[in-house]
Image (cartoon, rainbow, N blue to C red; front, side, top):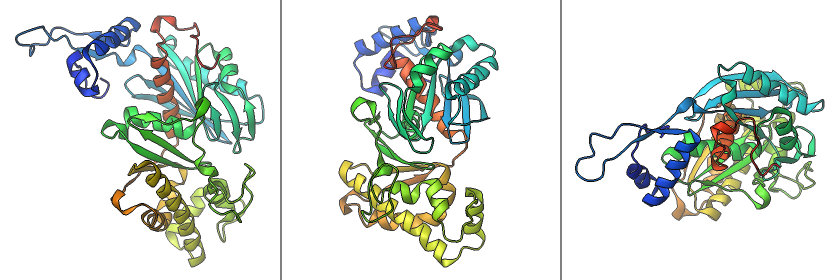
Length: 376
């Protein structure tokens, strides 16, 4: 409804391939919870039972999304139709008073709203292995966290349901509702940033493993004789394509150099050694993604993340590795590179919070009372 506008129950049933009784029950629940409202009888009804359209109430509820980097917290506030009200960046130190820093930015975000009481949930997006059922960070090498129950602690601090997720899972969930999922039921989302990850969407469902764990694509070993990864294995994709590792290993790149400097160097006057280095990273990624395409039969790939600004330097190697690996009968493979902004991961976290809040039937009149969630 957020994308199409008002719909009758029969139109919803047709769009979602659901039975009328199921749609009627779900719409009744959404009306009761305050997310949608009925409109006047549709003049197009004609003979038979009149069609009563319903529409989303975009500002009936809001969610806050937070993405985490080693130096900053990015926050957004989102309406339930996917509209972003604001985005902010906050300085962050992952080694000091973490819950206090998170609660501070969440409370600041709420205080800036005309109706802070309408916030129903908080989503947090983190690069690393996350037990989503418990909203616990199992390990995040970029933040140096291990077995950190961030969700339960923050939930107690801010008095709202808090959902912590791997960044690619959150971003994939958001794409299903507000992005590529609008006209695609199956796709892979390759995330390139501080971590290397892969979101898997099949039949509009984002894959998660046992206990809500996410796929650890970045810790696939592509060279058993390669460098030691922090996970304990050798030659993982992370040690080649992770942002920090890439900057550290790029030929001729200064030790204190940043992503913008490397991008400028590649655009203005790249030397042959650097070009070959970037193409080799692309090739490793392409071969690895190609194996997943063969395994799942999903031929639509979205590429997103901070490192996509370097994609022109990696694309030739990626395509060579991808097309040299994918089974011929699965061609053509569609590859789309998304324009990346600083707030994308936070938007993904907000989308996850909205999805989970509605799935858990968080009623609007229950603000301030914590529902029984997987984080408790």
